Image 1 (tube, rainbow, N blue to C red):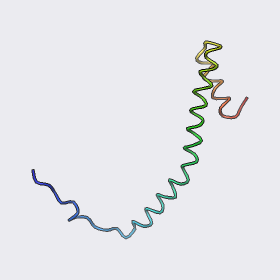
Image 2 (cartoon, rainbow, N blue to C red):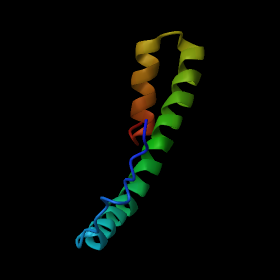
Image 3 (cartoon, rainbow, N blue to C red):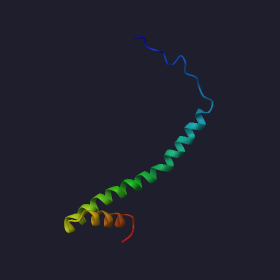
Image 4 (cartoon, helix red, strand yellow):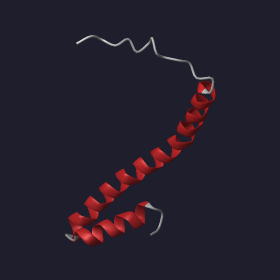
Length: 73
């Protein structure tokens, strides 16, 4: 099977710099959201485990963990 030279048919797009800039802005605005969500998931897992060890009830443990980690007491 012959290799196809994909660079031969490659054409530059005049909109590429603007697209790259827009993607960079999207990434930079989503980083704080991703960090916050990762922290919440870790908090929910740890809190749920602690509650479950004491109460042995999965439904209540998960519900209470989500409430505590989202800022509600």
